[in-house]
Length: 257
Image (cartoon, rainbow, N blue to C red; front, side, top):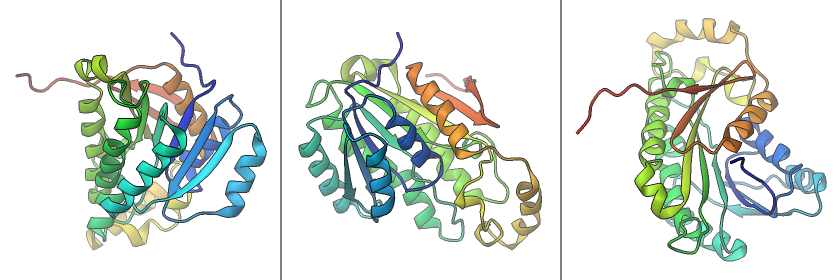
C-alpha cells in the first residue's frame, strides 16, 4: 500500500536549510494537516515563507535544544498537546563539527534518540498515537568510513543502528510506528561550506580536497527522493540518495543470536 500524506501531522526536528528543510517545503504542497518545526532558534522569515506555500496547513514552531534533555522533554510535550498525535517524524538535524565531539554526537545522534523516544507516546498506537513513520537522517558516511570526519561518521553509523533496531517487525506489530534511515551522498548544502575547519584532526586536512571537488546533488532533488522512499513504507529500510537517485541498501548479516 502507498502512503497517503492527506490529513497527517508532521513533526520536523532540523534546521531552516539543507535537505530536511527542502522536505518541509515539498510536504507543504501535499494535503497534510499540521506541521511542527522544532529547532534551537526560530527563523521567522522562513516560517512565513513556509506557511505562505499552503495556508490550509497549520504550521507552528517550537524551540528545542537537542543538547538539553529537559528542553527536548518539555518541547515534545507541548507539541504533543498542540497536535494530539504525530503521524510523521523527520529527524534531519545534521551537524559537521568533528573537533567538537560532544556537539557532533549530540546533534546527530543522542539528541535525535532522545527526541524520538519522547515523541513515541504521541505515535505509538498503544499510547496516544495512531502509528506512523519516523525518518532519520544518516549519511553515506553512516554506511562507509569517513577518514576526514571520523566523529561525524561514528554518529551517522549510530543513526543506522538505532533506526534498524527500532524498525524491528515485532516492535512494529505493537506500535504501528515504522522507521527508515536516509543516507544522502554529497549534497550542495551549508554544511559543505567549510569542510577544512571541521575535520577530525590535522592528518585529515589533505583528504578534504577530493570531497570539495566531487560532484554534488541539490538538496531539493535529495528531498524529493526521500519523500518517495517514505511513501514506499518499508519498515527498517535504509536508502542511499545520491546524485538525485534513490537506491535501497540491503544489509548483510554478520551475526545472529
